[in-house]
Every structure is written in C-alpha cells, then in structure tokens.
Image (cartoon, rainbow, N blue to C red):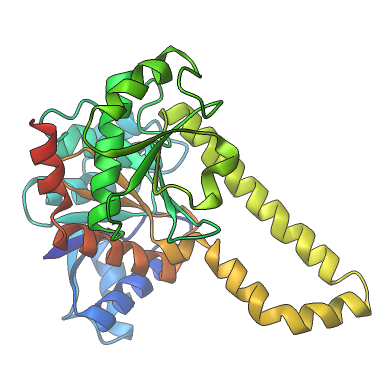
Amino acid sequence: MRIAVDALGGDHAPGEIVTGAIAAVRERGLALSLVGPENRLRALLSQEGMSAAIEIVPADEAISNDEAPVIALRRKPNSTLAVGAKLVRDGKAEAFVTAGNTGAFMAAGLLIVGRIPHVDRPALAPLFPTVKGSGVLLLDVGATMDAKAENLAQYGMMGSIYAERVLGKVRPRVALLNVGSEEGKGNQVTKDAFPLLGNSGINFVGNMEARNLLSGEVDVVVCDGFTGNVLLKMIEGVTGTMFELMREAFTADYRSKAGAFLLRPKLRQLKRRFDYAEHGGAMLLGINGVFVKCHGSSKALAIKNGIFQAEKFISQEVIKKITGLASK
C-alpha cells in the first residue's frame, strides 16, 4: 500500500504537510510518496532523519485557490495535484491526499483518474460530529451541483458502503435531506429520489430536516452538491461563531474566568470534537481511486489523520465494493 501526499497543497505547505507525513510513517510505518519540489522536500526530511523513509516524487508547480480548476490542470501538467492523480491512475499509489484547491482536486479525480464504471457522478463526502454516535457522513457537498434523482440514489449506496466499511456501522441508516420529514416533501428531484433510495437495498429511513443533521439519528445524509456545500459552510460558520461567543462569555469578568478554568478540560474535549483536524478529510466517492481532501487550513494533525483515513479506505476495499454494487 502506497499513499501519495500533495506537499504543496494548503495554507501551511510544505512544512506542516511534511510533518504530518512523517508522523504517519512513524506511527504506522506506511509507505508514502510526497509530491512536490525535490530539493525543498529533501531538506525538510533530512532535518528529521527521514530521507530514506519517504519517497519524493518531483513536481514543481502548485495550483492556487484562485485558478480555474480545469484550465489550471491543463496548463500545469507538472502541478502536484496533476502528478499525484497520475500516480493513482498509473497504479503507482493507491491513494492521494491533498489540502489544495478543491475544484482542481475534484477535476483531477474525474479527468485523470476517471469514474468507477456505472457511477454517473462523484460525491464529496465529509464526516460531521454528532451529539451521539460516531458522526454523520454528508454527501454531496460540492462535486456535482445539479444532481438528478438517480445520482442521489447512488450517493446513498456509496455512502452506505463507506459507513459500513470505514466507520464500522452495521446496516447504516441513510436519510435524504429535505424540507420536511414526510414522504412527498421537497422539490421534484428529492421526490423522485425517495422511491429510488427506498428500493436500492440499503437501510433508507426516509427524509430528514437539516436541523436534525447533527443529532446522530442517522449515519448517512444524501443531498445535491449545491445544498450540501451551502450547509457545510453554514455549519463551519455557526461552529466558529459559537466558540467565539463562548470565549467572550468566559473572559467577561473574573467569575466567568474562574468558571472557564474549572470547565477547561470539558471545553477542550468539546473543541476537539468539532475540530476538522481530528476527522481527516472528505472522500471523493465514485472515482476509480482513493482521493482524500483535507481542509485548506490543515496542519500536521489533519494531514496525518487524512493519511490514516486513506489507509483504512484502501484496507477495507471500498472501491471494489462500490464497483461491484454500481455494476448491478
């Protein structure tokens, strides 16, 4: 098993990326390939005595967040995103992990690696923390903005396989994100998707409203990419605002500070629970390779966990399972 890592992707590249990769190798002895400028990466690895432990695949260009994804991939064939995707396509790596440009990441998956046969559209699937349980998988959050009912049904099946194989769920509960819980609610796409999900052979439990997303009542929630992306950014914003308001409240006066001191261990636990770094990244489901997208602000911990996430995805043969289901 070999995992390729984009050394120039994200706000803290390459230093934090290299540190995360080194931590993954030291903890689990994984075979990694860092994709990036050879001399720069060699120097960083040498400082930690890891030159012989991690392979370097030369790539001198990075795709910035303000570049058009498809155009950038064509103009920069030696970019880390393009080179990393080619490693997966050519069988030189089984997975690719990046914190780089999300659009280019998805375009590389589609254009360079390609879709799993019979999967019409890919889905980007992050894991969100919940009040109870081990999290909820939401897909799609931006890979396909205008999904059809058939796409949503495939998302449900792919998400169910992911939840079962990677998250260890038995008969994962799959819901359709909607404006109401009753059957017949929603726009035409969700109305058409409802019976398709119900007849797909997965444990479909019906519609779910967004307010119940983080309750832990279900394991997988399906929606189109536009809705999912809006919801993702809304959750990120609300979470950030909540912690900022808590910080202000706990530092308002000496009594608040005293209370915060007593609650510090629990507050740290709560913050870790909602920290994206603890969950790795979002999987791009539906392409013929393992692609993990870490947050653009990822530091070493998030990169390490993204690598571990890719490792588990590979070991549980999720691609093979999705391929078998999609061909039916």
